[in-house]
Image 1 (cartoon, rainbow, N blue to C red):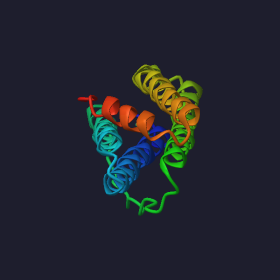
Image 2: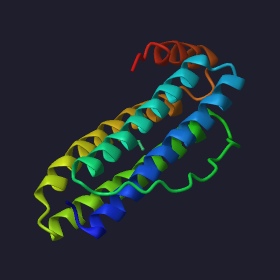
Image 3: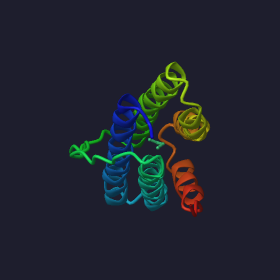
Image 4: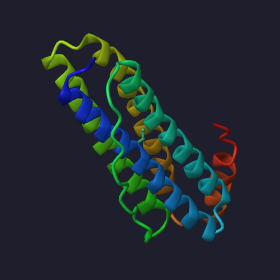
Length: 163
Ligand code: OFO
C-alpha cells in the first residue's frame, strides 16, 4: 500500500496525463483542419500515448492496493496561432509534466518509497524523450520558416509515425 500523499499525487498525475491526451487531440483536430495531416496524425498518436501513460499509473495504484480517484478533465485549449506556436505550446506543456513527474519522484524519495521511485523512473526517461522529439520538430520549423515545401516534407515525415 502506498501513502496518502503518494496516492494523491499519483491520482493527480492520471488527470494530467489524460488532460495531455485531450490537449493533443485538440491540436490534432486543428492541424487536420489546416490540412497538415502528418502533424495531425503525430499529435493524435501522442494523445493515445498520453492515455496509456494515465492507465499505467491507474494500474500501478491498483496493484499497490490503493485507490484510484478520477477527477474532472478540464477543457483543453482549442485556439492556436500556427504550427510553430503549437509545438512551442507542446514543449511548454511537456516541461510542466516533467516537473510534475519529478515532484512525484521527490515525494517518493522523501518517503523512502523505493517501489514508486522505481516506477516513476520510466516516466522520467519518457519525458526526456518527449521533450527531445518536440525540440527537434521546433528546431526544424524555425529553420524552415515559411518554406511551404519544407513544411510539406515535414508533414510527410511525421505521417510515418506508427505508435
Ligand atoms: Fe505523458 O508524457 Fe507527455 O504529457
